[in-house]
Amino acid sequence: MRNIWAPWRTEYISKPKDVPCVFCSAPRNNGNLILKKGKTCFSIMNRYPYTTGHCMVAPYRHVGDLNDLDEKEIQEIFSMVKELITAIRASLRPEGFNIGCNLGKVAGAGFADHIHVHVVPRWTGDTNFMPVLADVHMISEHIEKTKEKIKESLY
Image (cartoon, rainbow, N blue to C red; front, side, top):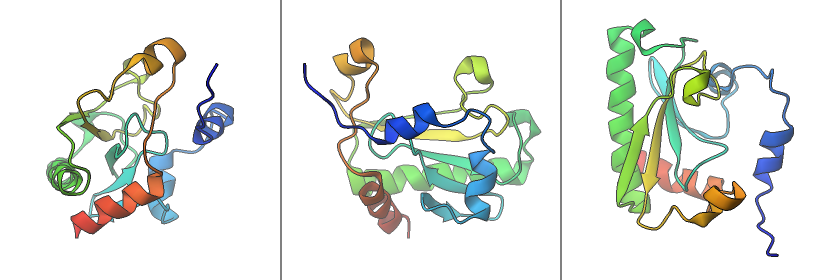
């Protein structure tokens, strides 16, 4: 049997599930994974990514549904999503993207009460047997290195 080193997963698995909302606390605490702050929203690296470069954009307000966002928030969120796509294309050269929101716990939202948009770069062959058979995702680069690459391309 082969071992796969993914120590960041232990933190996620063992973390109490009643933790404060990361999307409320990260911008106030200047979380180290924040990529950019706007007037109504911010972008942040996903600490437990599906693939290298998995980012999210969230409003500062603790809002759980797309319909509860005002027009300024919607405009800035999707403007920031566009900026992330451009920066990730320049820095990581993905072949495509998955962009979306999981609305509600049943839809897969880890923090269902605070809406966020996932920006997930994709490459041919990045999905293999590991997630299906072993419930393991392979991340090819340290998150801090990926964050610096994307940040350089954002500014």
